[in-house]
Length: 573
Image (cartoon, rainbow, N blue to C red; front, side, top):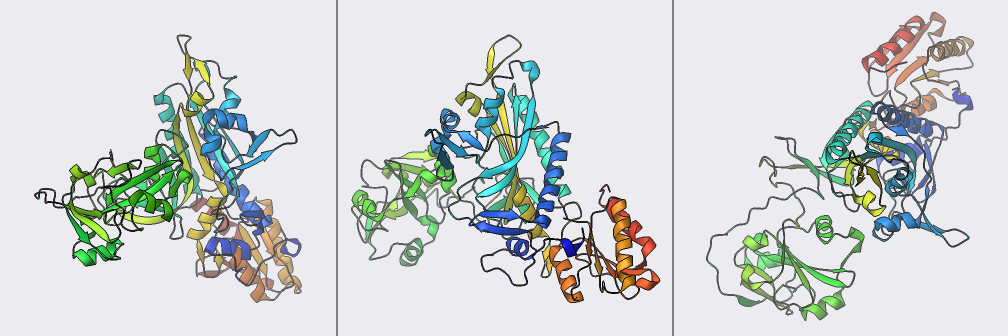
């Protein structure tokens, strides 16, 4: 492509709306433009990257035995009601009615639609296993769209669904997709970790997330350097050592704590550590009020809380001040489990059951009770309601855990019979008996993968695209296209490389050299050829984006240099 005819509206200034490098650079490089909040258009350069990533995904999915289809983005309410997700999915679902007042949604995911597709077609165990996928636009009404392509309301996703006759087959399909995903992200030159994740409202079996490591990632990745344990912060099991478990129980005592409400202030008042307190957190879940008891030096993991109640997280709501006063008979900050309103359901983290002589709110303004023990409280024990924090021990080997940030670019779920139960999807086994399909669901965020690559591969000048996903492989910059020898050599190399299957940009614009070099750095084309004053000698400058070394080579050597880099990265021309 000749840049003199290309639509590439680059920007010199950083757009005020952009917060993270990928968002800033995609806008500045003329690869995307915002339509409205959370909705973006892809311009020629950006769309080429999207297609490159899609093709890598497509190749690996096809290699793994999956078959591509294309389903509708408009989905009828009835299917979602059969699985119970019309309500459970929550406010992120775009809902609409047609002219006949029939309800639909814009698909945020496609489990129901895929199983509806096959349930009347797959009749026998002989037709299993089956794995089908699509690459399609999804829609989610994000409360706070942000970070450009990271959290948008419209996005491109590869979603695949496997159908098996038994658990062993489902697990085999799961691992097959795991290997395919590793291949995809390795080919995209991403540094990633595979971690245990929380399935939420999606399924009932194993879930793993593929996290591209980045300090701007919205997810926290918990991992152990001494073993293979890795999980999201939502999923990570907390190993919490309770202190003073063997001390004698003491008599309860009410203590005046004037206007002292926070754990930090209480620690200073009592001159003890936070582990000697028990927090009482109050939530409303629909019509119920729930008190959660956790050690005072820890935070509640709302995902684990919601999973215990078997509800989506959006149904959790912190209790309002007026209701807190009603159920505790006290101002906010003095809630506790003793003497709270009888209709309040109490959930107790299992570690609290082992604590001795701890301090809780007295349900009385300006008072706490010390020397409380589990015998004084009535409630339900929950194994783990705690959020992981730095310094916690690995549940697998006992070493200290590390916590970094990451961008979720892919996930794989074992769904079991959750959706085949809801939609009554069955096949006939070897004995002619009806059995439910066991499903898996597998997603890759194409837009997110694009953004994650930039987050991991950029500098202060612009993007540094890996060769496999770059919009073009080579950029030829003609310093002065008014000089015939330079323009002729640039076009000669352009034609030669194109004829050999290399994707080339020819910067033949009548712009100052500084503008051309700035744009070349910004858009991040990996291989750079500069045609300048030595054009009459057949000499050009060859360099690689992101590397400082520049070499003068003869024009006859250009293709071999390009070919060598393709071979080093195991890429075909």
